[in-house]
Amino acid sequence: MAHPMAKDAYSRTVGDGHSIGGTDDVPGGRRNTDSLPRDRAWRPRAGMTKAERDREQNRAAGGVTKRVVHSDGDDRAIATIVLTPRRRSGRVMASLQWTDAGQRHRRPLGEVTHPTRQANLRAAWSLAAETGLLVGDQEVAGSWASSPGTRASMLSNRGRDTKPELRLRSELHRAGLRYTVSARPVPSLRRTADVVFTKYKVAVFVDGCYWHGCPTHGLTPTQNRDFWVSKIEGNVKRDADTNLRLVDHGWFVVRVWEHTPTTDAVTLVRLGLAESKDGRAARVIRADVR
Ligand SMILES: [Zn+2]
Image (cartoon, rainbow, N blue to C red; front, side, top):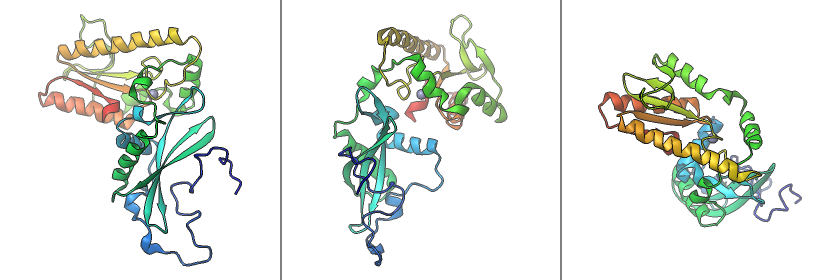
Protein backbone atom coordinates (compact mmCIF):
# COMPACT_ATOMS: atom_id res chain seq x y z
CA MET A 1 0.00 0.00 0.00
CA ALA A 2 1.42 3.37 -0.96
CA HIS A 3 1.54 5.62 2.03
CA PRO A 4 2.98 9.12 2.43
CA MET A 5 5.07 7.94 5.36
CA ALA A 6 6.25 4.75 3.72
CA LYS A 7 9.81 6.01 3.28
CA ASP A 8 10.28 6.05 7.03
CA ALA A 9 10.93 2.51 8.16
CA TYR A 10 9.51 3.30 11.57
CA SER A 11 6.34 4.83 10.29
CA ARG A 12 4.29 1.78 9.51
CA THR A 13 1.03 3.34 10.50
CA VAL A 14 -1.75 1.72 12.41
CA GLY A 15 -4.52 4.22 11.95
CA ASP A 16 -4.63 7.64 13.53
CA GLY A 17 -4.33 6.25 17.01
CA HIS A 18 -7.59 7.69 18.20
CA SER A 19 -10.06 5.67 16.25
CA ILE A 20 -10.61 2.04 15.67
CA GLY A 21 -9.90 0.95 12.16
CA GLY A 22 -7.27 -0.33 9.83
CA THR A 23 -5.94 -3.74 9.16
CA ASP A 24 -7.49 -5.51 12.11
CA ASP A 25 -11.03 -5.11 10.83
CA VAL A 26 -12.44 -8.21 9.29
CA PRO A 27 -13.70 -7.10 5.86
CA GLY A 28 -17.43 -7.61 5.66
CA GLY A 29 -17.27 -9.81 8.70
CA ARG A 30 -18.36 -9.73 12.28
CA ARG A 31 -16.12 -7.86 14.66
CA ASN A 32 -14.78 -9.82 17.52
CA THR A 33 -15.63 -7.16 20.08
CA ASP A 34 -15.01 -9.54 22.98
CA SER A 35 -11.31 -9.18 22.55
CA LEU A 36 -11.24 -5.38 22.23
CA PRO A 37 -9.20 -3.71 24.94
CA ARG A 38 -11.35 -1.63 27.25
CA ASP A 39 -11.68 2.03 26.28
CA ARG A 40 -10.22 3.23 29.54
CA ALA A 41 -6.99 1.42 28.78
CA TRP A 42 -6.24 3.51 25.72
CA ARG A 43 -8.91 5.99 24.58
CA PRO A 44 -8.31 9.68 25.32
CA ARG A 45 -11.09 11.43 27.19
CA ALA A 46 -13.56 12.94 24.73
CA GLY A 47 -13.17 16.62 23.98
CA MET A 48 -9.67 17.05 25.36
CA THR A 49 -8.03 20.25 24.21
CA LYS A 50 -4.55 20.33 22.73
CA ALA A 51 -3.25 21.80 25.99
CA GLU A 52 -4.91 19.07 28.03
CA ARG A 53 -3.47 16.36 25.80
CA ASP A 54 -0.05 17.94 26.20
CA ARG A 55 -0.36 18.02 29.96
CA GLU A 56 -1.45 14.39 29.99
CA GLN A 57 1.65 13.43 28.01
CA ASN A 58 3.91 15.60 30.17
CA ARG A 59 2.59 13.98 33.33
CA ALA A 60 3.11 10.50 31.94
CA ALA A 61 6.58 11.28 30.63
CA GLY A 62 7.69 13.04 33.79
CA GLY A 63 7.94 16.49 32.24
CA VAL A 64 8.01 17.94 28.78
CA THR A 65 11.81 17.76 28.65
CA LYS A 66 11.51 13.97 28.72
CA ARG A 67 9.55 14.08 25.47
CA VAL A 68 12.22 15.53 23.22
CA VAL A 69 13.39 13.27 20.40
CA HIS A 70 16.34 13.42 18.09
CA SER A 71 14.89 13.91 14.70
CA ASP A 72 16.36 14.49 11.27
CA GLY A 73 19.58 16.45 11.32
CA ASP A 74 20.04 18.66 14.33
CA ASP A 75 16.38 19.34 14.81
CA ARG A 76 14.49 18.37 17.89
CA ALA A 77 10.85 17.62 18.22
CA ILE A 78 8.41 16.92 21.04
CA ALA A 79 7.04 13.40 20.79
CA THR A 80 3.72 11.97 21.86
CA ILE A 81 2.69 8.48 22.86
CA VAL A 82 -0.15 7.07 20.79
CA LEU A 83 -2.11 4.12 22.17
CA THR A 84 -3.85 1.94 19.63
CA PRO A 85 -6.28 -0.91 20.34
CA ARG A 86 -5.61 -4.17 18.56
CA ARG A 87 -8.89 -5.83 17.82
CA ARG A 88 -7.87 -9.42 17.45
CA SER A 89 -5.45 -9.65 20.29
CA GLY A 90 -7.41 -7.35 22.58
CA ARG A 91 -4.15 -5.63 23.37
CA VAL A 92 -3.02 -2.02 23.43
CA MET A 93 -0.04 -1.11 21.29
CA ALA A 94 2.04 1.96 22.07
CA SER A 95 3.90 4.06 19.53
CA LEU A 96 6.06 7.13 19.78
CA GLN A 97 5.00 9.79 17.32
CA TRP A 98 6.47 13.13 16.33
CA THR A 99 6.36 15.57 13.48
CA ASP A 100 9.46 16.91 11.86
CA ALA A 101 9.38 19.38 8.98
CA GLY A 102 5.77 18.48 8.32
CA GLN A 103 6.55 14.79 8.22
CA ARG A 104 4.97 12.51 10.77
CA HIS A 105 7.13 9.78 12.23
CA ARG A 106 5.89 6.84 14.21
CA ARG A 107 7.99 4.29 16.02
CA PRO A 108 6.20 1.26 17.47
CA LEU A 109 7.26 0.63 21.07
CA GLY A 110 5.36 -2.51 21.92
CA GLU A 111 2.45 -3.70 23.96
CA VAL A 112 1.26 -2.07 27.17
CA THR A 113 -0.92 -4.01 29.56
CA HIS A 114 -2.23 -1.71 32.27
CA PRO A 115 -5.96 -1.17 32.84
CA THR A 116 -5.88 2.62 32.50
CA ARG A 117 -4.70 5.00 29.79
CA GLN A 118 -2.62 6.95 32.31
CA ALA A 119 -0.73 3.85 33.43
CA ASN A 120 -0.25 2.74 29.84
CA LEU A 121 1.09 6.15 28.83
CA ARG A 122 3.58 5.97 31.69
CA ALA A 123 4.63 2.47 30.71
CA ALA A 124 5.00 3.53 27.09
CA TRP A 125 7.21 6.48 28.02
CA SER A 126 9.44 4.02 29.89
CA LEU A 127 9.65 1.93 26.73
CA ALA A 128 10.40 5.05 24.73
CA ALA A 129 13.29 5.89 27.05
CA GLU A 130 14.92 2.62 26.05
CA THR A 131 14.87 3.36 22.32
CA GLY A 132 17.67 5.89 22.34
CA LEU A 133 15.41 8.26 20.42
CA LEU A 134 14.86 10.58 23.35
CA VAL A 135 17.34 13.34 23.87
CA GLY A 136 17.48 13.34 27.66
CA ASP A 137 17.45 16.20 30.14
CA GLN A 138 21.04 17.28 30.00
CA GLU A 139 21.16 17.85 26.31
CA VAL A 140 17.86 19.67 26.35
CA ALA A 141 19.13 21.99 29.03
CA GLY A 142 22.20 22.72 26.93
CA SER A 143 20.28 23.46 23.78
CA TRP A 144 18.27 26.56 24.56
CA ALA A 145 19.91 28.59 21.91
CA SER A 146 18.31 29.24 18.62
CA SER A 147 18.00 32.20 16.36
CA PRO A 148 15.61 34.83 17.61
CA GLY A 149 14.01 34.63 14.19
CA THR A 150 13.20 30.95 14.56
CA ARG A 151 11.94 31.56 18.05
CA ALA A 152 9.83 34.53 17.08
CA SER A 153 8.19 32.70 14.22
CA MET A 154 7.60 29.65 16.40
CA LEU A 155 5.95 31.70 19.10
CA SER A 156 3.98 33.92 16.78
CA ASN A 157 2.45 30.78 15.31
CA ARG A 158 0.64 30.42 18.57
CA GLY A 159 -1.43 33.49 17.74
CA ARG A 160 -3.60 34.09 20.75
CA ASP A 161 -0.61 33.72 23.05
CA THR A 162 0.88 37.07 22.20
CA LYS A 163 0.20 38.66 25.57
CA PRO A 164 0.35 35.87 28.11
CA GLU A 165 0.88 38.10 31.11
CA LEU A 166 -2.03 40.33 30.14
CA ARG A 167 -4.27 37.27 29.94
CA LEU A 168 -3.01 36.04 33.28
CA ARG A 169 -3.63 39.43 34.87
CA SER A 170 -7.12 39.70 33.51
CA GLU A 171 -7.95 36.16 34.73
CA LEU A 172 -6.59 36.96 38.19
CA HIS A 173 -8.57 40.17 38.25
CA ARG A 174 -11.72 38.35 37.21
CA ALA A 175 -11.13 35.92 40.06
CA GLY A 176 -11.30 38.88 42.42
CA LEU A 177 -7.59 38.95 43.19
CA ARG A 178 -5.82 42.28 43.51
CA TYR A 179 -2.16 42.80 42.83
CA THR A 180 0.53 45.21 41.74
CA VAL A 181 1.91 45.01 38.22
CA SER A 182 5.59 45.10 37.34
CA ALA A 183 6.93 45.91 40.77
CA ARG A 184 9.84 45.10 43.03
CA PRO A 185 8.74 42.59 45.64
CA VAL A 186 11.63 43.72 47.85
CA PRO A 187 12.34 47.40 47.20
CA SER A 188 16.02 47.10 48.08
CA LEU A 189 16.40 44.24 45.61
CA ARG A 190 16.66 45.33 41.99
CA ARG A 191 14.38 42.60 40.70
CA THR A 192 10.98 43.26 39.16
CA ALA A 193 8.18 40.71 39.11
CA ASP A 194 5.30 40.80 36.63
CA VAL A 195 2.55 40.42 39.21
CA VAL A 196 3.07 41.08 42.93
CA PHE A 197 0.80 40.23 45.85
CA THR A 198 2.44 42.35 48.53
CA LYS A 199 0.25 41.33 51.46
CA TYR A 200 0.82 37.62 50.89
CA LYS A 201 4.37 37.92 49.60
CA VAL A 202 3.73 36.15 46.31
CA ALA A 203 5.74 37.28 43.27
CA VAL A 204 4.74 36.02 39.82
CA PHE A 205 7.06 35.91 36.82
CA VAL A 206 5.81 35.15 33.31
CA ASP A 207 9.01 34.09 31.60
CA GLY A 208 9.41 34.53 27.86
CA CYS A 209 10.17 31.15 26.30
CA TYR A 210 13.15 32.29 24.28
CA TRP A 211 14.96 34.61 26.64
CA HIS A 212 14.49 32.49 29.71
CA GLY A 213 15.48 29.19 28.10
CA CYS A 214 12.19 27.35 27.92
CA PRO A 215 13.02 23.67 27.29
CA THR A 216 10.07 23.30 24.93
CA HIS A 217 10.68 26.24 22.64
CA GLY A 218 14.45 26.45 22.56
CA LEU A 219 15.60 23.35 20.83
CA THR A 220 17.00 24.28 17.45
CA PRO A 221 20.70 25.05 17.28
CA THR A 222 21.62 27.67 14.75
CA GLN A 223 24.05 30.42 13.81
CA ASN A 224 25.49 32.69 16.49
CA ARG A 225 24.77 29.86 18.84
CA ASP A 226 27.44 30.78 21.39
CA PHE A 227 26.30 34.36 21.64
CA TRP A 228 22.69 33.44 22.30
CA VAL A 229 23.59 30.60 24.62
CA SER A 230 25.60 32.90 26.86
CA LYS A 231 22.89 35.53 26.78
CA ILE A 232 20.16 33.11 27.68
CA GLU A 233 22.32 31.35 30.25
CA GLY A 234 22.87 34.72 31.87
CA ASN A 235 19.12 35.25 32.12
CA VAL A 236 18.55 31.78 33.51
CA LYS A 237 21.25 32.30 36.15
CA ARG A 238 19.76 35.62 37.09
CA ASP A 239 16.30 34.04 37.38
CA ALA A 240 17.68 31.38 39.72
CA ASP A 241 19.41 34.04 41.77
CA THR A 242 16.19 36.08 41.92
CA ASN A 243 14.33 33.01 43.16
CA LEU A 244 16.87 32.41 45.92
CA ARG A 245 16.87 35.98 47.10
CA LEU A 246 13.12 36.37 47.15
CA VAL A 247 12.59 33.08 48.97
CA ASP A 248 15.27 34.24 51.44
CA HIS A 249 13.13 37.29 52.05
CA GLY A 250 10.10 35.07 52.70
CA TRP A 251 8.50 35.44 49.27
CA PHE A 252 6.73 32.76 47.29
CA VAL A 253 7.98 32.86 43.71
CA VAL A 254 5.61 31.63 41.01
CA ARG A 255 7.32 31.00 37.66
CA VAL A 256 5.25 30.32 34.58
CA TRP A 257 6.28 30.27 30.93
CA GLU A 258 4.70 32.40 28.27
CA HIS A 259 3.46 29.11 26.80
CA THR A 260 1.79 28.01 30.05
CA PRO A 261 -1.99 27.90 29.65
CA THR A 262 -3.56 30.76 31.59
CA THR A 263 -5.74 28.44 33.65
CA ASP A 264 -2.61 26.59 34.82
CA ALA A 265 -0.88 29.84 35.66
CA VAL A 266 -3.89 30.99 37.71
CA THR A 267 -3.90 27.66 39.57
CA LEU A 268 -0.22 28.07 40.49
CA VAL A 269 -0.77 31.64 41.67
CA ARG A 270 -3.68 30.46 43.82
CA LEU A 271 -1.46 27.70 45.21
CA GLY A 272 1.15 30.26 46.20
CA LEU A 273 -1.46 32.47 47.84
CA ALA A 274 -2.99 29.52 49.70
CA GLU A 275 0.36 28.31 51.00
CA SER A 276 1.24 31.80 52.11
CA LYS A 277 -2.09 32.20 53.94
CA ASP A 278 -1.44 28.82 55.58
CA GLY A 279 1.85 30.10 56.90
CA ARG A 280 3.84 27.57 54.91
CA ALA A 281 7.52 28.13 54.15
CA ALA A 282 8.27 30.31 51.14
CA ARG A 283 9.31 28.45 48.02
CA VAL A 284 9.48 28.52 44.25
CA ILE A 285 6.43 27.18 42.42
CA ARG A 286 7.09 26.32 38.79
CA ALA A 287 4.75 25.67 35.92
CA ASP A 288 6.65 22.63 34.66
CA VAL A 289 6.83 20.48 37.76
CA ARG A 290 3.17 19.91 38.42
ZN1 LIG B 1 7.82 27.70 26.01
